[in-house]
Length: 595
Image (tube, rainbow, N blue to C red; front, side, top):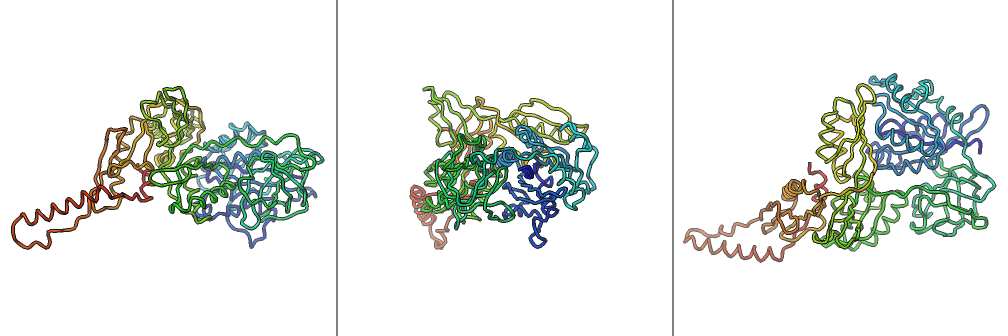
């Protein structure tokens, strides 16, 4: 065990985590040159296209140090705030972390939030200053920032360029010297924490784990502590670029187990694996339950594929433990699922992955957050969906979730960022200057205001310099109303939203204008109305497609033309009573881009 080191790489988005991981894999010769490519651990097409890490990736490297062979288990983590749950799971299965900071950008919000998480778990932090080869690098300034934050010596910081490989080799020595070996009892009962899993259509569920006590051998009878299910370990092994079977996985190491599990529901991330004969007395404290921030409905495009969608979501949840879902039904869209996400980027990625990996096309409704509704009977209801709102006469008051937002930016953009936060009903809690030209702002804001486009707006007005992180602080009373959209007099429940009273009129008007452009024209006029209760607050009309019925009238009295027009009008009226309006999928997504 003394020759095992488990560590992860944490940083803000785009500070060079995956590139640094590439260099470490090259130096330890884990991959041959033929397998080597940029961001080799980002194995999803989507990750390569967007240039971001979506999943944590674990890989084992062998390293010779002073004549001894060491096993280094590396986990590369995502940087975006929407994938913070991946980071928390990686941190829980490591003893040390490389904190990467971009020399051109300095310390940003996600750097700080990931660092605090690592310190809470008692990890040994090795600071790395990346991109020193860039012209815009401010090596001395950013080094001082790191020293202030960590309280370390400037000499402790590794100054590297992950792209060129300059300064990277000493990091491997530091990992061996400074990160502690895992602690545990190799002869005790088996205790292994599941930190990730994937579904393989040939082998069933493959679970990735880290062993805290004991060891596991091929052919062992094991059970999962929380679900109580029993299995035989058909194959165990370690995580190289591909899975590498071994006879056993020892204490302190990271590995995988295949035991022919067919049902995705039987494996829970955060569960403990133990032996059937000599079980451990208690489970390892897993990860805190993930709290989704944004809720949206997902419905199959073809209503008959509901069961297929259920199976696909079950398999998908194995690979993305921060995704939650429960069945629901809608008048307009039929049966589907109410899904919880950590943010809008997460929603977008999930939708894209369902289509690419499982060939599942889904309709997604307008995202919203979860509210607490206090009724006049003294009940408290959790409402994720506007259609679940009780009648206005039964509501005593509504509370909405609030967040503490931490924004770090150049001081040049101080004014515009404050205006953006105030427009989103934010209240300033504190501000302080980290350096002469970098400021940190802390705001209390409603979560519902940052769900739509806040992050994009922030990046735009600060020219990409501002960084943003947040955590939930609790619930506060709010003046919320349910805004319904009526198409041809019928409420389209999938387009309903809960919104602050002050913003309702403006939002309703924008919705009507947008839908007028998106809904295809029919043979009859379609009124598009926004309503609060019985009160209509905005209206637009999708004009009908008309046939020129008077074309065949040559000359004669005007009454002949009028007779034909009246006949057409009667037909339109009858058609409008029985006509239904189809809302295209683009209309649901357009609501997100109303700005």
